[in-house]
Length: 348
Length: 255
Image (cartoon, rainbow over all chains, first blue to last red):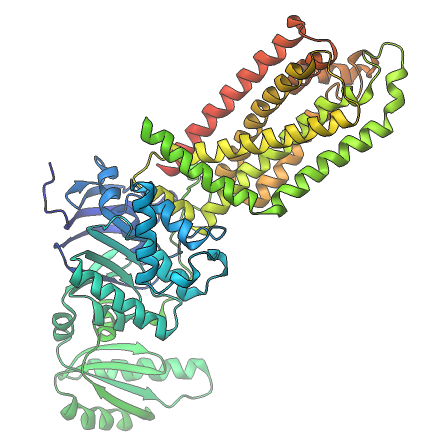
């Protein structure tokens, strides 16, 4: 018997340790309600993909309890697969197949009879505007076309829940907007519960009703984008320091500026950013002259200064002390389906 | 059970389509078989005149070796196919579907078997044109095609085992170099009596040799069971062992 409504996700104390010891997911809890659009925001290697793979039954968890669409991942993985649609970071397409055949096979694997599967394939190609290339091999498609095809491939069986792992990474802005539109409609019109992972603040901001910020395998903040921004507690003053030649000097100046700012009563947080400092203050207008005076008195040359209401970038900064873009790229999460048995190689 | 068969069938058809629409996979395999056949037959033709040689037709004598080496080489393809789907992410898509996961493996193995059967058939047909005569007639030729195909499944399993363990196309391809002795340390070119002493020892402990000799016995001696059964028994044991190992590794890798 399902314990929860079909569209919900309930995760308790989820831990994933890869062979080799990497703790990719470190005791996280979250609940996603039916019909909700939920975002997982975090840098590469934060544990987003790992979490999604566990939810999608592609990867075994180390410990914890996970129910998806009312079914436990340990006890009823097949029931979960029947009810969810999953688009991984690497689009899982069959390059040698024609788009129509690929979708028809997807339909059949989800139990549709042949005429139904063909009808659904046409319908889905229509939906993403690829009807004209239905008989073309997928290998010839552009990046945007591949993403859209991969996305509709997850919809053949009208899933209640969708897991999308960085669905717009690598897309040009035009394709990204189109895809966002599709996702919004799926959520609003078909009532699909959607969990999306992203590294893009504006993507999370525009699409998600609620989101969790994940870093080093832990959820560091959770709430609606508006609520999270509200928690930043004031405006963010970004100070660009005039850059001297040597990196040591540059470093020293930034450290000096940061420690000065930290001492001020009106500053609630500071963090280093590209070429300078981000300072969170109660009132931006009042703080700017004070900050400028403080820095010029201490011989820190300021070349630019801006005040902004908080964005999700600031939320991330506040909770992790870093900008999401500062992270090195290069995912450490395994993208392939097969894992070497007993973890003999690339465990992590 | 019905749905397992159906799912396997869909995946099989997909794999088959991928194979036929890729002449780059099909043609080199056929070319090398025909090439080796023609070259070996021409180079060693006079060997059949040696005293103690069991048949007058060297082409007939060499035919089983051509089939055996084709099947060994085809093992690479099975591993290659699984890895291609793994690397492209398509394997994930299949694993996410509400299907028996074993159907994915079965789909790969069945296409390997089909490939093996087609290659074997091509070799036999070419052989017949080149003057191969089977004392057991067409039933004998069909029997060696069946045995050859089963032997091909064994090697496909080995290819899959290496692919799953290494997850590398290059490693899978190059490790097959180590299997060549299995083809050459046999009575492929000469009857055992005409081989050097150490070679005779190697031949007698090489399981592939027994399979080869069973296949050859069918076409040059006929239905003499004491010549055929040991090879068939070894073939069945090899196939059972490799299929079991492949299934276990695959289940672990995709669990």
